[in-house]
Amino acid sequence: MRYRPKRWDTETEVTLRAEGRDRIVTVVSVSSTGLRVRGAGGLPKGAAVSVMAGGAELPARVIWTSAEAAGLEFDRPLTRQAMDRAGLRADRPGAAPQG
Image (tube, rainbow, N blue to C red; front, side, top):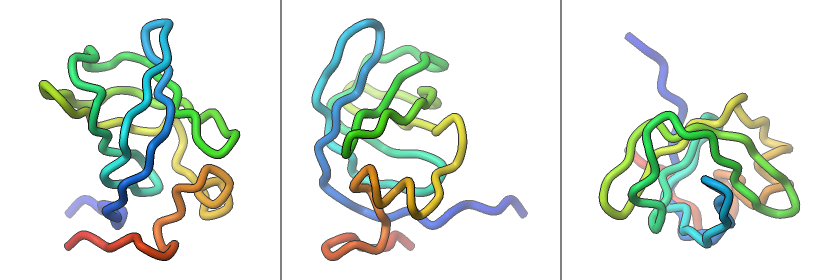
């Protein structure tokens, strides 16, 4: 059985830098290994992107995409401290665990 990090529901706006342009997207779930974002549809699978949040630049790759959303995997898993700095900490007030 493969370990899957706990994911948390959220509604957090971040800047996504992809294909030479910035766009505001909404993070709808987060874990230490990646994000599901709304507003990033149409990005090619495998594309290198950067998530700009809380003054941090978090390199990631697109692992799936649909017409309106995308799944991003961080190049390296985030520590709790990195999630805090980026404003993405999973157990902050208002976040809810999935599953």
